[in-house]
Length: 291
Image (cartoon, rainbow, N blue to C red; front, side, top):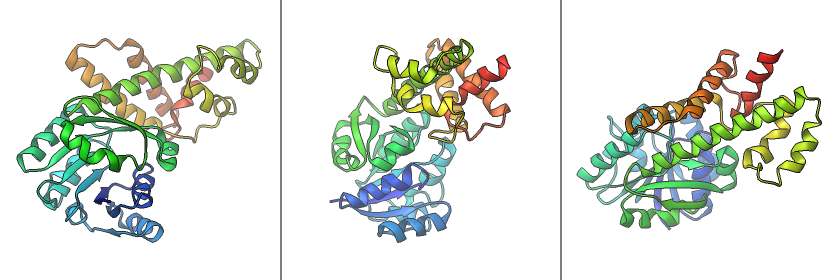
């Protein structure tokens, strides 16, 4: 069993760190709001550090799961960041959905200071984190990945090394491109059916078993029909992710016309006050336009 640190106890990190305890690992946590770290320790045991550096002391692996590039730099390479407390040979595993540029920068810094680095963004949402069935997309060196993969198994349904540092983040971008298109397609299908007077739930009960089926269709169509949008991944976070995607596409020359349009639809959701609605709220934009 490993001695690990987990930095960032949000809706994803809190249960992920808990799964590490259940798997038998010794866990020390850090969260910007210390009360949440204290609550986690009261629930799961282990201990907490008052700074990322303190949490990282003596850890073999330091996991990070925060909001964005800026948050990531703050808890890793800035003053009192994790790297200030890590021991030689330890590995930093970043579960943040961040830019590939940030992953490459952290890999360079870690390598220069004698640490390993793996960028490992996840997919599966809050439910996947709570149930320990996340998909983990990894970038970094093979030998480093082999050290951390058995520990990541505590909350992963699947994981794979996909290339050098940054490859995990690029894979997550592909994931978000797929989700954006799928949710928009589902929203349009439901809207079309409603406008046509169909029993949408009955139709989807049939088509979800065919070629049109998807996780989004199976898990979100009922809540969309019921006009409930407090499930899963928030629009604000999706827009953050799509900004990363579209910025990377401008760098590498990829054409993403559908993704760009869906990003603007999410901007309309935000303008409607739906910042914390889940991503399936794209249906609200269509309904508003036809009302």
